[in-house]
Length: 262
Image (tube, rainbow, N blue to C red; front, side):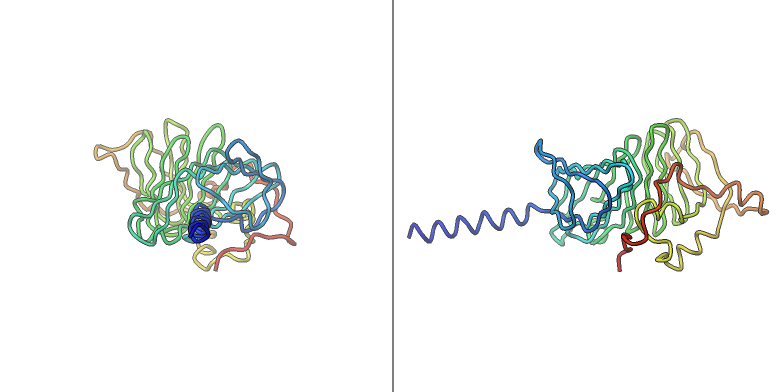
């Protein structure tokens, strides 16, 4: 009887430990570390992640994380992110919350974005990003933050109000104002280890488009700022308003790319 009870106890411990893992480091390049319970773990492909883990990358490094619901997060060099909350049950009580502290990130929401989109949040020093089943990039520097949506749409909430950002647009925040514009993706994708050749047809279309910038210093009365379409009139305007994330990391060596998800 004691032996049976011991086996049951051991199995329960094993099951609980398995469920404690929320994801895995799928790919990486350069030096990166996971901080867990006052311990520093050097990142390697296949390293399992837990809730409350802090992931940090060094210069000329990047990591690709895959969570249990197939949410994907790429982080570029000198980045820091925290897995604050994570629960995937395939039901509406699933939730995910991440803190992007600094650096350049790319996120593709997985199944939680479908079963519980309101429970998926990304927090930055100045804003909270809500999703609607999408792909987006975040660049956090000391002076400002940039959030770019490439698929679907995102809702960015800050002290300036709530802004809906659709695919192909980017919001820049410096604490007092923001603007929304079309951007090119080439250098951004390389910065987080994604070959440009793997861009989807929609992404390639976005790379060649440009819209005029709209600067806003305060939210409207409804606390939501509508995004208006405005087309560039000539090549000069197009060149002027085609933005690229500042200070991208050096290109990832072609022999060790971080592949885009299927």
